[in-house]
Length: 119
Length: 114
Image (cartoon, rainbow over all chains, first blue to last red; front, side, top):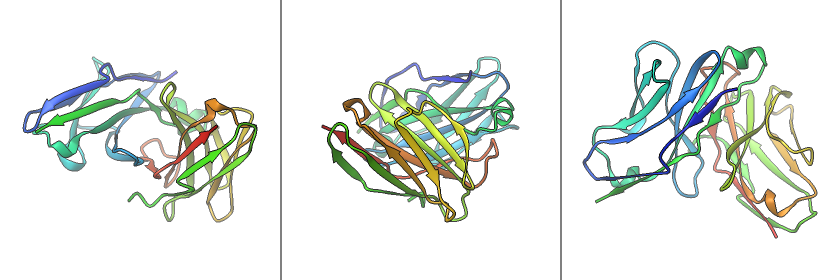
């Protein structure tokens, strides 16, 4: 079964400093990986995804993520954090082709990491 | 704004009651997903529909049911409600069922069972 772990419940960073949110995954087939962000009282917003190709994926709002197959990780990064980046971040995985064979397309989410950027 | 709409935004009801949550996917999206977000369980997949047909089931209770209508909107029915059903319920949509399709989430319906 597919699973995702976000080892940190909360990450604190000063504005202007680099931000990293960690994610590790477990799948049977090939991983399709996603990052979402949730602001207070809002739905989840798609940030970026890794399907295949370059291990460094660029997404919205200056975020990027690095896929590392040997470490089964997909860490989210931002070179210079903003106060407005304070939110809840979710990593998610889809197990391909296992899910395709099961005719399903669900995402399995990690527990979320709360990011607090201080001015 | 993701283009996915959900109604109502908030719902307060009593134990034992039945409620219906409604979702309209993004224009052109054929696939609809329902998720439940609670403090103790996190974000859990409930069920997926594609073009009117059930495609996949997750941790959905027998007291819960869903359907997708010909106009592609979807409803999630929750019956015999219990206190533990209090949660944020999200609907998401995607264009198809490809593994690379990202899902776009609605703002959610916050259900409070008293």
